[in-house]
Amino acid sequence: MPEVRVEGAAKAYGAVRALQDVSLTVNAGEYLCIVGPSGCGKTTLIKTIAGIVKPDAGEVYIEEEAATALPIEERGVGYVFQEIALFPHMNSYDNVSYGLMVKGATPRERESPVEEMLYMMGLEGYATLYPRELSGGARQKTAISRTLVSGSTLLLLDEPLGALDLKVRTSLRYELRKLVKDLNLTAIHVTHDQEEALSISDRIVVMKAGRIVEVGPPQEMYLNPRELFTAKFLGEANFFTGTVKTCTDHVEVAVNGSTLMAEDREETPLRGGERCVLAIRPEFVELVNDSVGGNTWECTVTSASFVGDHFRYELRASNGEVILSKAAVRGDAAGFAAGDKVFAALPEERLLTFRYPEEGLEKALNLE
Image (cartoon, rainbow, N blue to C red):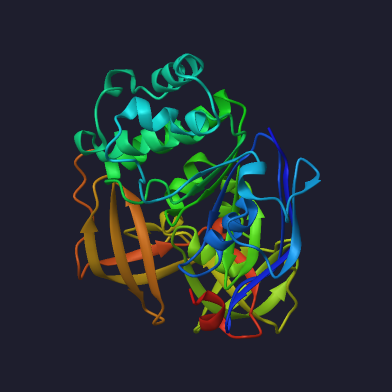
């Protein structure tokens, strides 16, 4: 279970700065997910850890050993790509045993670890099948098995489930996490799927434009992000720009002619007269038929969609603000329809407060 440490990593491709002074510690035995928009540097970061990319500056340490100059084969790293690069002329057994064969293991020496890995991955019945005969999920399991059977204790996963359909992807991500924990591995998993990262990681790294924006446990990152971009990128959120009217234990904020009360956060204490941003997740916006007191805005439903386990509503408040709400489906309740008048309750304990960003809200939330 190696610890991985990156210190001040930088990498540029011409004018594109893929990594900018990136520092990160991955704890031994941790399952860490890296997320961010396309081109943010997440793949460059794990390729730097693997030794596939040489940084222009900075250092990589694996188990406290300087690894920046080490070739990939000396780092104890297993790398799984999104593209399932199996040898088409080899069956599953031979694909999985390939790494051991390259290391000089005899057929007898390869037999036990390969069979054990196939069994652990639920592939024991697929040993004689060729990649063209396997489903997408089975092919990716075979690729992961080939990576692990060589004894790598650091697993680097570069969007390994991205090419699979939703149901297979959802099932396999939990299998991946269980495998990592059962084998006492350290895993760094790059994904574009925020739900995937939230559901399987011990911690999440959010990146933007070659930099790390925020790192933390998934529940904390979702419910109480420190940065506006994290609130925007992980899941969905409503954002309201306002001005602080009063600030004691709670913050009173003027928003487009209305007033909202929110709890002041220690990490971003606000002052009277200061511009700020309030954010709230759509699932915490409750729609009711009557005003229930403070933090309730009269709205018109502009769009209503049924999305299986919840209704998704787009609303326009009487003060002009646009709100997204998600309401869980309960029994045979029909929900609201476009044109309905409703009240949106915004619980103050669910409203997150942020200082207004110097670069402006649009740029702070931009995915570029």
